[in-house]
Amino acid sequence: MAKDISFKTGRRTPTFFKLLRERYLKDGIGEGYITFKWEEWGKNSSIAVFRAVKNNRVVGWIFYDKKTSTIEEILTESTWKGKDPRPAMLDTLISRESLVAASLLKGDKEKYGLLLEYGFRPTLYTRRNGFDLVKMELSTSVLMKKTGAGKPFHAYRKKERVAVEKIPSTQTYDEIKTGLSNLIDRLGGLRRFVKPGQTVAIKPNVVSDHGYKDGKIVGGIVTDIRVVKALTEMVLGLASHVYIAEGASINRSATSKMFSHYGYDEIVALDPHKVSLVDLNTDRFIEKQVPGCKRMSSRKVPATLEMVDVIINVPVLKIHFAAISSLAIKSLQGAVPPIEKYMSHFFGLWQSLVNIHHLVKPKLTIIDGLTGLEDFGPVSGTPIKMDVLVGGTNPVAVDAVAMEIMGIDPKTSPPVFLAWMQGLGPLEKNKINVVGTPIEEVAKKFVQPAIDVSGGASFTIHADEACPGCKGYLHFVLSKLRRPDPQDPSRSIMDRPLEKKANIFLGPSTAQPVNPDEINIFMGVCQQHNAGLGTHMPGCPPHAEVITKAVFGLFPDIERPKYADETEETKLGKMLEEILEKSV
Ligand code: SF4
Image 1: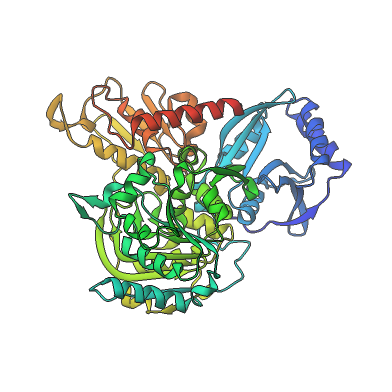
Image 2: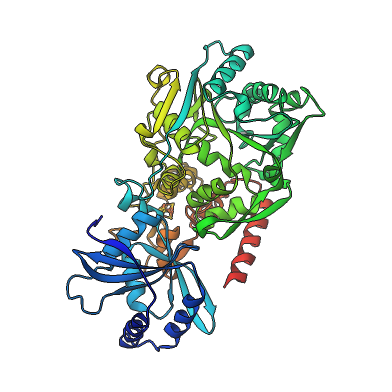
């Protein structure tokens, strides 16, 4: 990524208006739009003007709305004769601001081409004051590629402490409780987090019923109930009330059923007057503004998490087939209402997870690593006995240490990477003070899922630069087609001859050009610019239901697998369509 351009703060002077007017007239666009924008910027105090400087010379400007993380204008200095400086200006901007959007006039082909080439994709068309506008979002995959080897511009200043506690392999309840107590002591003791009389929400991971099979608990999928029980017992010594709060992500209406599945009544029985179970999916919700409005301007958070004094997040040490890990950052997906769980795929799941952390702030995170889950987590992986607890106050630092224990580079997880880039916490080892059991004593390399996005006989997948998000979800859907074809069991469904050759494109760019005479399916925000050339699966990454519907559309006689309760998903899909219609 180019590093030869720096920004200095500029001012909105009349010279700019002259320059902009000339630029729009030169490109055959009337001056009405820029006159409207100029007046609008004058009333907006969050517009920053960045002067781009190269070798002590101003080469261009960016008008940037800091409140909405949106590029309003990008312009080259009129006397500049060298190579177009704007891609390098965008490099500098994203190294400072991470995931940004851009707003432009729909007919501005020159700027559209520049942004498209860089990695922005058109996600929303709106009409305002008689002007047709396009909102373009930067592909997360492009951002990760361009900034991956660098450091966050806004470096995290504090040093964070993360505690690791080895638990005896016998894992008796008393051993777990003692381990938990030691872990919290290493972080400053329970009174550092919970004051007498405060209300506390403990948020375990109870993602689905996969952790209970044939009458037996399968470890590593949901938080071990013994950890939640021991923690509740400890917290009850100080708190006036403990809420065990979770909103299951798969079959979302069934959180209460899940609580009874996993025996949570046993925890309520500790003190039925002071312990309650809360299904966050059916809670009352409070709308909150997202700072920076990255991918979304507001989101709803459950009232219980707003009302309590302290939130303790208790995820599991596990792999996620698309997010790479499902730890502190990922597990807050359970803390958003069902429609937003669905919508967050549409607007950008990875950024959505960072946004939740701006609004729902656990004071303490304790990762249950009694049994972890390797391979195809979060629900179909293989349990791996780990005998460890990991805890801390900063979710990014906790995830960094947990992933080191699992033998995974934390920067490979898109949501953890974004949280780090956006200053939520450190990944750097010199900024994390690990206390307790040395990492080497508990580390075991987790098997990572073998993601297979190969196609079939007349079905090609083009995934050159896709991030793990689209690849993971596509793998999940394709795996259902890698079985004998009922029409001819000697081949798989994937290898069934189709009337026309079919393609699925994913990732921001692919070597293969689109052939309009073939069947073309485009996946995610990264391929949104091609939506008009075939079937488009919206989202980043698209929801499993959306992918299933599009891919199984090629094989209409094959029954579609159900990711979750179908009526519920259809209802959510309709709600999302209505929301999107209103926004256009
Ligand atoms: S659309 Fe897919 S490939 Fe692109 S950034 Fe999102 S998840 Fe990754």
